[in-house]
Image (cartoon, rainbow, N blue to C red):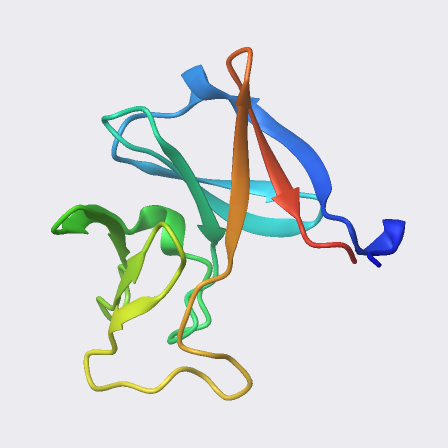
Length: 124
């Protein structure tokens, strides 16, 4: 059984119209830095803004792209490529993540409702 405290917190962060297709934007959602991406096809993705390889809050400045049908974001620091769908690091560029961090980005469920973007953040 899941306790109420274990449920994610839904946080409204912006209007879809505030986003530019194929460019990221950093938002502060319930005290957490999140990078949002609106793709040309209208999908919106949210990942941790902090790169697990550099520790810098720069993922919102990354380069969007794809690997086949998989939407991706490349870190602007060391150029690691991550899946926007599940945060998996698709190539490490021969580098290891910082101590205490895994190689992948955290992702957050996105809800679009009446032109507004909300995120489901893990319970604190």
